[in-house]
Length: 274
Image (tube, rainbow, N blue to C red; front, side):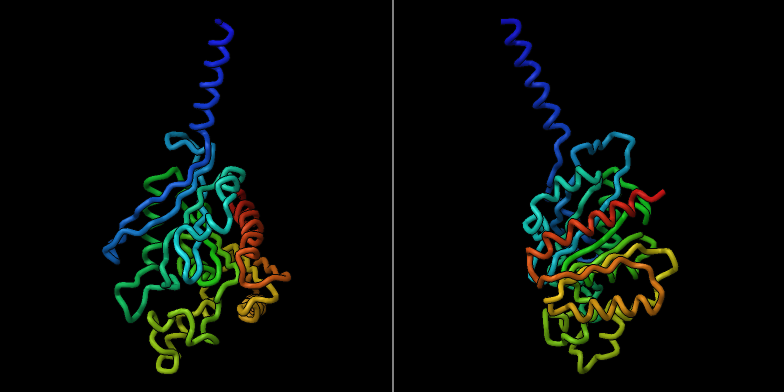
């Protein structure tokens, strides 16, 4: 009987330990003062995360594509919690609607640049044990989110130390009638200079030497492949260090499920730099 009680006690202790140190996937509401609304976000903490511990964790922000939401990445890559544990990082997936992650120059209700780069980062740093410096923050995303991640990384080098893109719309100008971009920028034919100012590929001269670790990934069969290749070649022209990946595949969940593995390895190496 004593042996049985001992075994049961040991099992209970084991289950408590698993519960205590299991990775967590939470839906967190964050208030945006700039847009006067609450926004949903997925926050994934690794199994060894301890809110009261001394360890500070790097944070990877993952942005969804057009038509997606805060749950898109966890649906595409259900093993994200395991990857967060393996790499000992926090992963945050905000809801960006169909905003392209700009602060719209024509619609004051669309302030997703401010939300992600300032309000959300501030919230995460206050509520979680994070490394509160660009060396502890990276941002990437798919499609619209790939554009958004590069845009935010380049325009907020004081916040993010690394950025990436998967199948990203890194030059919006060849697609003037697509994906509601005109709601944020106005019609292209009436505002070509504004579209020039709000596309990633024109932002490269802003990158400070050594300020950003950058990774670009796009499939050969993707409709965004040419603009990604153009971005790569322009970065070579400006002598901007970056990783560039291209392989067979299109604008699909299967491609993104595979690509995020490479990106997480890249950002993990960045976070581990001394």
